Image 1: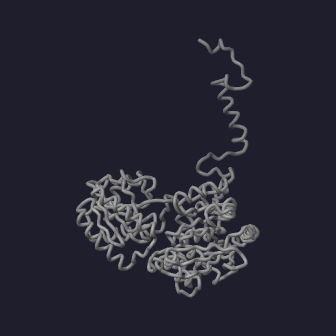
Image 2: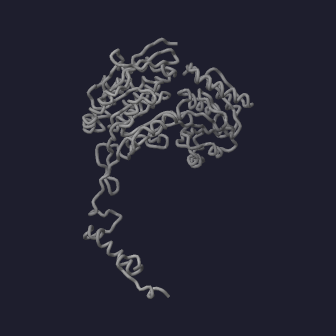
Image 3: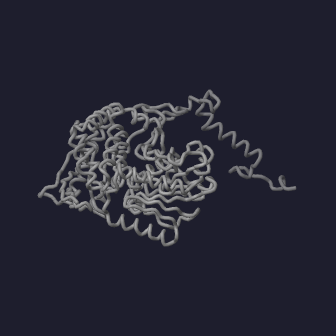
Amino acid sequence: MSDRVVDIPIIINGSSRYPSEEFPNHTLQFESGATGRIPVFRRDDLREIQKEASAIDAELAKLTTADIITFLGEVGERWDGRQLAGRRFVGTNAHIFTQFSEVMMERDYETIGHFLAQRWHAYDQIESEFGDQRIFDEWIPVQMTHRRAFPRGLVLHYLVGNLPLASLYSICRGMITKNRTLAKLPSRDPISAVGLAMALQEVDPRHPVTRALNIVYWPHNDEVGDEAMSKIDSASVWGGAAAVTSVRTKIGVNVPLAEYGPRWSATAIDLDRGDVSEAAMRVVEDASFYDQEACFNTQRVFVKGDVGALVDKIRHFQEVFAGNLPFVSINRDILANRSLALGEAEFRGFQVHASEHSAVVVLPPGELDVPHPLSRTIFVHPVSDLADVAKFLNRDTQTVSVYPWSIVEEFRDEWAQAGAERLVDSGFSRMPRAGFTHDAMLGMHSMVRLVCVERPWSDPGRYYTRRTDVSRHYLIERYERVRKTLEANAPSLVPGVTTDRAEIEP
């Protein structure tokens, strides 16, 4: 238990405001015993965001993609070197609040540092999603148009506490696309996004990308928070069904909404073609990181082959994983939910192997009624044919990790048609490759306006015949030709043309 009290600032137009006696504050209590104090998001703060919006937008518009990525690269290098107070702030406090292993949190913070410092990651992401890394700076020729991406303005990032890296990555998308950020902090992790903002402040507090950051906290149905959501230009919502549904009702018409709502993931294994120890090691990694709270964490394993041998190996590697990344949560709801689910499985006669930090449950093929409790619990389903995996996938499925990889070409079409959105090498579900899609979408698209300039009709391109007088041809002569055709073949359809019925009746 911890009696730590942490003062957490909110960020308004890139400037920090810490808790004080002058204004009201929220007090957040955590299972660890720690306390967080954070200023209330006031209507005056919202007015300040709106007041500076035009000036900050103008500053961002002058930046090139290279300007932004170079600045973020400097932040990443100093973040990786642990030179920044913001980096030390997250390293000291985040694991106490989130109840994740300290090692697990450090892996996330290293990952975001590498993403920022190694500039090609951002360029690869832009090129993957838009086809050209210069789409934010230049008009790119696309068939009979030129196309360019422009920011939408103020982007809401409705963040989630069960995946710290998601918060940081969401904000990075907003920065790369030249938008202003309104990040709504989750009560479980009010630390990670603030630490990143502090890092930008330390490197250059007056940089337009820094000044474009607004990171605040408000509770559910807060009046100022709801008013802020009504003024945004785009939204990325992370979290459960209730959060997604709530935000939908509070944003305006024509505001794009990228939903990263509740999903579940699975692993498909053919032990007749692979090594059982390798398969188990990979499954445990996919299921256990983030204590199984991320959408891409494996919950169910569909196995063709010796299930008993696989279960024995899974139990072994669960112990290995727990030695490296202990299960440290003391959240009573989480632990009670897991205990209830395992108790139900035992009562119904299913094979259950449980320890204080993980569990394996063997369920009959097609048995999906036992509610999954997360918390490093692996449900194993024997199957005689991996084609049957498609029967259990649905629109809420995100990732299917595969072992051995050689089977993916056999089943990818069926699994994708059934609902799988991402097929990956087992053991690496949390490490997306360049070019990946996120919940069957491209993450930056909702944050930009793709504007096109169409070529004039004096350029017929490959689709149309060149005309001497193109405007007269399409705007006058084409109508005359259609009219003459109708007069000759269906005169009754042409206004002003009368026909003697005797002439057309037999």
